[in-house]
Image 1 (cartoon, helix red, strand yellow):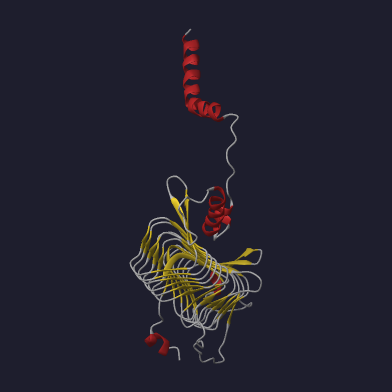
Image 2 (image 1 turned 180 degrees about the horizontal axis):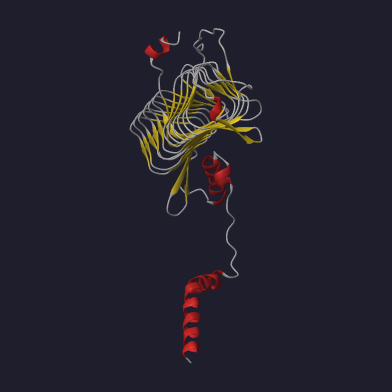
Length: 373
């Protein structure tokens, strides 16, 4: 009898353990959930494209409000309205509380405020210190100094961010993005992303004939130039492990994939053909060439005139110094930093710059440039 009561009590507690899950399953049984839009994670310009699609649907479904003039159409969505106008110019200090669609070119003065989304089908110029919610432009877009966007910006043609502009989310363009000093966003994506001084000549470094350290090393190598052959171990499959910090005094030619359990530093004019992963800070010397992927557990610095062709990932902050170039044939490159990503002048990246905090453009200190000449 006691065993039977114990068994019944155990079964009752067992059912309670799964009771809520069973009730939830019976509640939604037979229902069909809506499809997950995978474009949200696959498309960098998802917000701009989604807004354009919804806007076309709204304008097709909702009739034109009575009393609207030929110059201004008003579409009532119940809780909000959409204003549709031709080419327009807004004076400084203008406030707009409705969704605004401009069929031609658009220009606004300084210190305007747009509480809802703005769609421009021509070219667009936004005055200094203007506040916007989100902005989609089918032509060229220029944001003047101090303009701020609470969400995203998407342009079909050239996008120029003036000094100290702030984009709280993504900035995308089908052609190019120019980032002037102080401008920042969570990410930038375009065929070409560049900072001020894009067409200035790059700093030329004195090239002298020097010894080069091969990794993996040749048989019989000895400890020298900050490199200890005894710390290098083969992991198989063309991958090697280096136990400790690797900071050499002569250029490196990395010919295989390498994992460093510490910091990594290579002097100027190094060549990294393999992928590199380091637990600590990674510093790439000036005028070096990086053909593989770099993953740094902490900060990552690419000094002046470094050329890279793949993925850069930093667990800390990242800095792309003056003259850095990121490009490869047929595919975009990608740069991501868990901390702030700082981009100096005359940097060009064919692809994406992104950060968990912000990507910000800064001017290269002239005193620092002089040290490179």
